[in-house]
Amino acid sequence: MFTEKDIKQVEKQGLTLKEVEKQIERFKKGFPFLNLAKPATIEDGIIHLDDAEVSAYAKLYDDSKPEALKFVPASGAASRMFKFLFEFYSQAKNQYESINKIENEEVKKFFRNIKKFAFYNELKSTLQSAGYAMDKLLINGEYKTILHYLLTGEGMNYGDKPKAVLSFHQEENKIKTAFEEHLAEGAEYAKNTHGKVNIHFTISPEHATLFDELLQKVKNGYEQRLNAQFEITYSQQKPSTDTIAVDLDNHLFRNEDGTLLFRPGGHGALIENLNDLTSDIVFIKNIDNVVPDQLKDETIRYKKALAGVLLAYQEKIYKYIDRLQSENVSNEQLDEIVHFIQNKLCYTFDLADISDNKQFLYTVLNRPIRVCGMVKNEGEPGGGPFWVKHPDNHADLQIVEKSQINKNDPEQVDILKQSTHFNPVDLVCCIKDYKGEKFNLLQYRDPETGFVSKKSKDGKDLKAQELPGLWNGAMANWNTVFVEVPGITFNPVKTVNDLLRPEHQ
Image 1: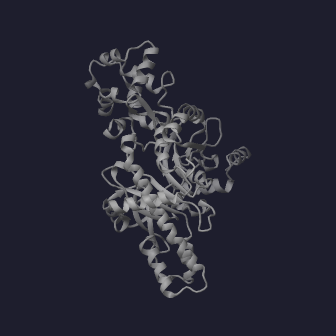
Image 2: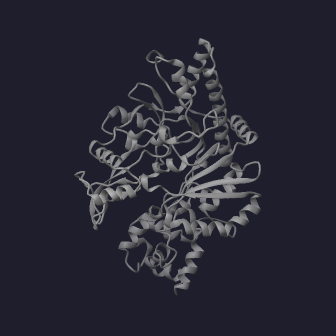
Image 3: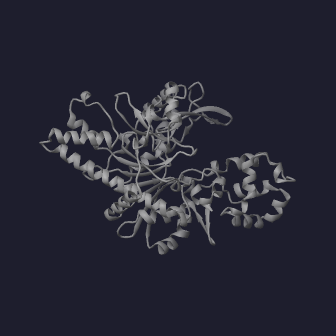
């Protein structure tokens, strides 16, 4: 099946033949669906904090001042953000007598509101340099020309740049990128006692120069304005996290030059990047979930509150681990620990099935911890919080993507419909154990939670495989706490028209 040349390519990728064969086996067998027990809801898996509790937990975090780091997945180009514009551009006429002749409502919305985008003036100047007047192009319905200079390399190249460096917001006369908004936000909750702010971005190798240039341009201004010193670090997805592609018959998919095709393993690959970091506390938030300064207060308050909840749980867990390691643990104390695990960590099990109670309880407690913000579901896409039952009969809290649910099982579909919240990717994590030593996060993944998707290359269909997602299967065996957070803390930019929402204006 594999030639000598293939084997060398696999090794160069940082993989072993055994790992690749295991991936091919996954294509043949598929991944099992998760077994939903019930949705996580308020007071049944999701904690609701009243205003006083939010303030108290935020104060706990402020007073504790642990060494924190902000981790921002920022890999990849913004092409999906402009997908509907690319589709229009590829088929558009050179001129339209009226905007109403455009069939796609999103395209109409984009052009009707084009002056509201933070990148408008730059686009206008880019067109001017090429000999075009924006107002004239709009009046004449020459929308294709405008898009040409927005999306392609002849102009601003927005279709190929990462979201991080795009102009997202305009405040008075200042244009701000998503990257800058993360600097401003990070300074408010990730600054240490010496004024240092550690932020780590995962980026694609081809975008490294863009990030460096932007950082050099804005760093001094933000440091002076926010009285902070930014320590910005980057990492890239490791080639060893790429996965092999196969054709629809599960045979090796080959490029036109005969080489094997490896594809990026999705955001689950980033657990390796996270595993290389050593901070006491890590805040995780996607690159596109940012707001202008006037709306940041509530986001910052809840970020600190989530961190305070994490510290409170961490203290309790360390205390119980300490107790389990002492010689004399009373039955009453064991009962207290069991109650905490079942009712606070929401990890349920039948003690009758367990032979060594102390060792079992220690193993459950001594794991990485994540506190995840959850937003009320108002139609946004994304995974959700559920209680999941496992083959060994224990149940726990998991963030579950729709692709992990068996849509042919009416009972599972019914549980999905009852879901009240979804995952906005708003996490605060503890990646060290009670001795202050780093966990090996790779040991806490559930390899059964990847998924297979259908793609194409060079006009040929193929099957691709994604690793267990960063906040799904890659963290499946962490101690998990869900906390409700308000909708104002979640303002993603999935398409360019999302920038027209009031929160981004």
